[in-house]
Image (cartoon, rainbow, N blue to C red; front, side):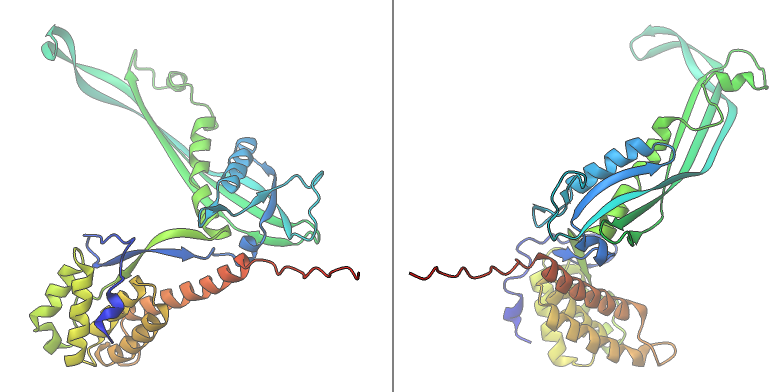
Length: 343
């Protein structure tokens, strides 16, 4: 492979200096549910359960603000009035459940300043007893997308969220009965604020499942060479480290090493990571497949390649398949030719 395939690498790329070496690049990722992503004309109906009205409004706002390649993905409509034409249309609705609500009340003793001699100058401190409460709620949201024409369910799922609250006030008296609960206004049900906070956590994973997105993806390096001869070559470790700051230099090193070690799994894999980060997915997939085959010889069972090799190959295969779906969904409709009237 020529060094020049990396010449245009990483124009929009950041290289992360963290535990997993690799190269970050901007990618177009398909939704987890292609059928939901293909239903782009939508409306939002009721979400039954606690916080349902608020959640429906937030869900609709999430759809309205969902963009891909800088353009809105969904078109919000009111099916009672709008003329949908031939567009595939669906209604989002669902249910909300509180799956867990717990609170714990306890006393604690803290040292507080009761007399000040000046700003930041405490003259006298005392131990003060406080009554504290820790409250936690867990929710589940069950959204569904219903096809407007057929009434069939296009998409459904279950998404969880949680929120917690802790607060302490100075205790007045030591009644260990139910009266302590009144100090914080805690009843049998969690507060609306706590429910809404938990529900908010479910919106992002739903968005990932129902619409494509632009995201930063990492093409990961294999940090340890399986072949002991390659591991002893100082260039390998240097290239792994260089990848965090100078990906072009690292990728050139992998290319050079591949000429000397053409059957070294980690070297071939890391060349694949460089090709992936430059969006040369065909070459990257070929290199990942080759490195996985070579890595089998170093596996524990001698049958399957180590997980890091197969995971990279599977991830890229899924990503390429997703790109094909995106192309289908974003392809402009053909324009019918206009016939000229006979003179």
